[in-house]
Image (cartoon, rainbow, N blue to C red; front, side, top):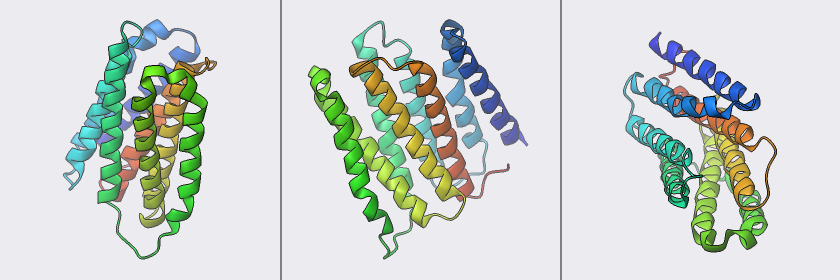
Length: 222
């Protein structure tokens, strides 16, 4: 029952936050942003214990730290850099989390998607490379990690039971879209309504991944 209330709260607050963004009231939305991921943390925290619960909580906590740091990115470049590091850690944790819950089968159907993941990686780096300057290595490392995270979600989509396999893949894809829009907007050219698109896909990604893990653990009460 408590999980249902927290889930409804996340959906309502996320909708309100995005509504403020699309209405041009980013100053008001700024105060609401740091409250969103803690709701997901609460959902995971009050669920019945499961083996990878602490790993999922750590990934969400790193994401929340990244959220807060990026709120101040316009004030100093270090806030963006440390925010990037926080999200890099979150993606590494998600990558490990997906792998830990994936059964190793002889079938390697997911391997045929490697060229598509590599194509994304090369395309985004090619698009941004000339404008990255001193951020070339950090952004390249980040792009490699999120591409690996996407690949592990594709692997999970073949090996996890339904519907968790669907949710984890959608979550990872939304994360890639969100980070790609953020990178293009910051390093290449302005994206119209960038904050709305970045945050809508990001919040959707986090919700889908939490949904996938809890459903896989059969701890989801809704």
